[in-house]
Length: 463
Image (cartoon, rainbow, N blue to C red):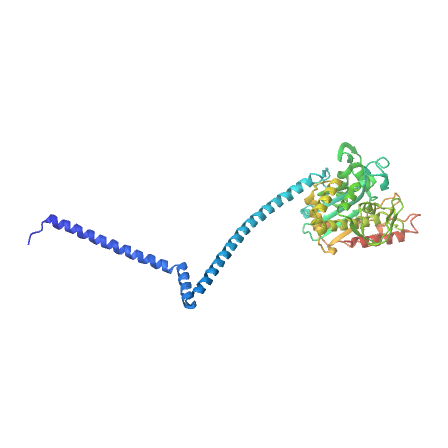
């Protein structure tokens, strides 16, 4: 045997080592392939498919040529159905995108509409939310108090309306003064009216220019004994706000002035308002205002006289009867405006807001603020909405003015500021605050007092 040298032995060792590495590599590849095959076989999709195939083999017999054709037809139907489903899903996605776009545009449109209408409101300076006359300020932090004043200016009035003209009756008066109080919890609304002839201590006020809707630098000196409607006549919105905050201690944070001459357009915009009329209204100055009784739908011209009439035959309460009609009408108008008949009719709603903006001026006033008041009253239990008249003695004094019952007035506005139970509006007037009878009123004081009490009772429960 031929001897093997060391070089040959070394080369053979290398070859043997390489062969072992190659074999080990092949074994590893084979094991990896087996593992991969096992993983694929045990994957959820593979298990489902194999299970479905096995079930088909067990349940489905061998198909005949006819069955093959039927199966092919079913396959085509399934493909067609799948295409329909795919189109539906695609259409649904497109519709969702369109809806999202419309919502976005709707929000933008609503914001744009609000901005458009807000720009139509005439803004005046009326509020003083830091006045020293405000009481219990912390308790009123989130309350809304709307001071609503009906300006009976004759600017633009015609002779046919029977209310006078700007030449015969110059200037502007506040024949209607109300405060709508909406507490922070929004669980009730209390609207309190103030007689136009209420005796007040009028403070110093800057002169009001109704033609320009602004105050001037001229100052009217205060007057210790004056009628409430003179506050607006000489000092406009800011002067009325001062007086009402002195009487009530409320923080007035919204002022709403409505020109009665444009008032009728709001009513006509919603195609009339339905009121409940108990007795025919025949006014000594305005004539036959409303002769029908029961639930009557009135137009703008009728509504204007309905809230203005204060010389109604057979009504000894004069202003108190008018206050009751004004309160009833405001409630009916708000109810109509918030009804689906108006809210869901873009034409009526737009016409109303346009008419309202045209006839309205105010401070901190706009669509949003007015909707706060209207929405607070919408759908609310009627027992939670109170229309009151500020407590007075019930008959004019020797100066022809209505006089506050101070103790009852304090109790009422203490309850409003602190959101507590309202006092009984029919509680008797303390003897010390009763009006002294005059020679002309002795025989009729009982009747007048009784009528006023009856009016107050009905007014306080009107919705």
